[in-house]
Length: 199
Image 1 (cartoon, rainbow, N blue to C red):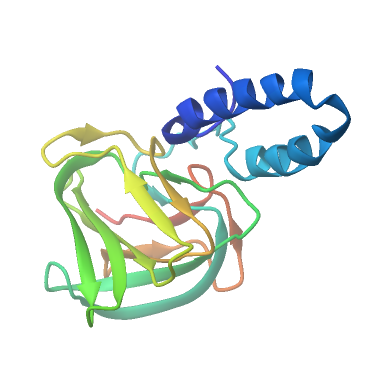
Image 2 (image 1 turned 180 degrees about the vertical axis):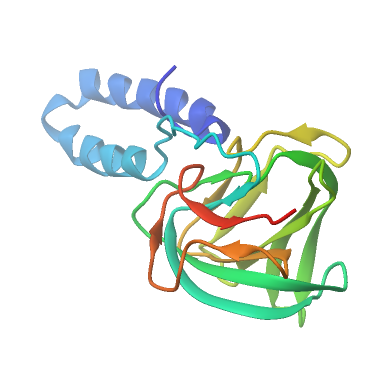
């Protein structure tokens, strides 16, 4: 299968077929359409990620930079947490990966002041660690979708959605985690470790 985000593979196939048809009819001018199409394909790419074999680690859910780390109350499940804030890359892959292995407890969309929307999902690990991923969608150009469903199990680092572009993502983890990534670190979704759980 082509390395294209699966949510957009149907659009990719139909769009390519249309461009091929245009190529036959308007050959000299088709290049004007192929260039933006190839640029779009760059943004919706989805290449394989090597997941680190560390069961008690949390992994970055998106590509980006660690912008902030703070001890604070998790507003979604009312729990003291260590919150990592990642500013998503505007150029990297926009695929979302699960930070941990466990059961999806809840999934919801919120409105912040009836203006800013957010996609939120809560995973509980087999060791009873709660991890909440909060994707802020504060622009009409930003989009978040997920294949997760409440009650299902998800693997550590598994691709589970598409988030674009340049979103801010908060990851709420247990307050006593060992922090591995620090502010300023570039992180890759499904690959780079944020924290290590302590048991």
